[in-house]
Length: 392
Image (cartoon, rainbow, N blue to C red; front, side, top):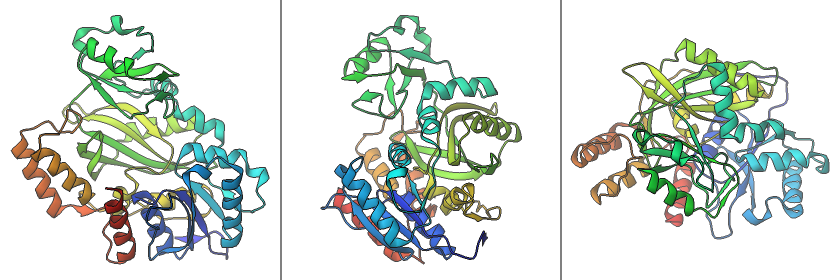
């Protein structure tokens, strides 16, 4: 890797302290960049720490989207001499974008334009574009607060996975829910106090996820396309992950998809993957760092560096992907406890007898590479687990 100019980048991350943030500090710090952080945290929460974190300031969650918060961000960027800022939450990126003219710092904003962010957030728009570029889709039904559309769903399509159209389109918010029949679906809808856009309902399939990571530069070039297989899911999210070859045809369709949205920066697709048929069913795309960032970084895939390259900050060579399984041991331990106490659900893939699930989890606990543990950054490792204990 080499910098584009003589001055070393000084990136700042605006986020909570967790695995994606640690991956960024370690990635950027190991390149010799001074990494800063605006840490979204309450006063009672532990402070962020890492060997590779040069400096940080705390910003309370209630200060987000306020004048006070904007002034605090601007002041830190100037004091730190930041060359750019990147946020993980899409809403925060939009807020920074829309208030750029009110900030005196010269730091760049490494985020797509707000209209692009908002467009990508819509699951309905995602499905439309996925269909247009030829990605495979599951049967999809739209269900609104008046329960319109339920009668059109054939009984054999149940159970259904329910997903909101966007992260803020329903209250209370959720990522995914399971409805076993029409009555269960109606009950799930009635429990929501607000539905701004119809929910997406798709048949539940007991399959692993295929995650495709990549980035797109401001010039419109897709870089770093890499596939990963999620062989275990817990509470609807990734538990273990490993790299797999990237199917050429799927890569072309993914590139066309991000081109249609004119996305910039890092992204990751999520598919359901049927190994027997080789079919990958599109679920969604996230145009940001996320829950698998630290896991794929532990596999050798440097997503935080690709994110900077997308905005012309640096150039990086093709990552040397390690053929290993990665997990968070803290999540594996919780998975074991849920197995022992019979609290697993159908969303905890794969569905298997409890003893087999427990033995597989214990095997992973002792053989998987951990997404957090780093022998070169014990400070960051301890800080994360300290925050985990404090949060309960």
